[in-house]
Length: 158
Image 1 (cartoon, rainbow, N blue to C red):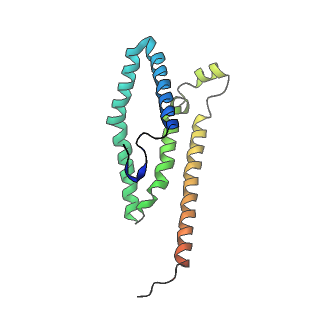
Image 2: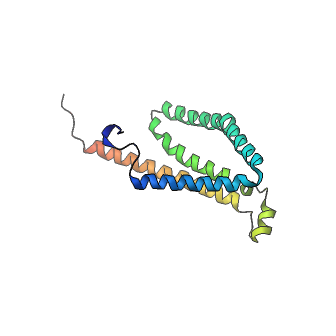
Image 3: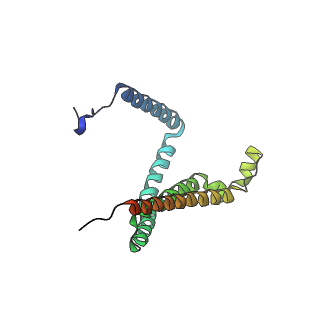
């Protein structure tokens, strides 16, 4: 079976082997994870899916719609990606490191690692600022290239 443009539907033999290995590894991890207390793990996954679908998706869809609407109002809807990417990366870091960023487990972290858990909020804020600053620099670079390209383009004769 072939897809349009001549690419095979299943991919190369190496591609198939890598998929088979990844499924085997995921199956092994699932057996190990679900071996001790499968009900609580399954409940945790279902709870996270419900939380994601009913709470988080409307929140970040609304935030994305607000950013898109604001940038569309100034005529630059294509700039949305320069807000989406750093916001998504910052939110992912916040989600993963939330217990340490919020300081809820700083004492436990200190007792387990002998390191201070007090700097996570400032580090996350710094990383977020760097992500948005880098995105702003990329936007400025893109705008300069576009201006240079429009200046070099010859005028169109009517």
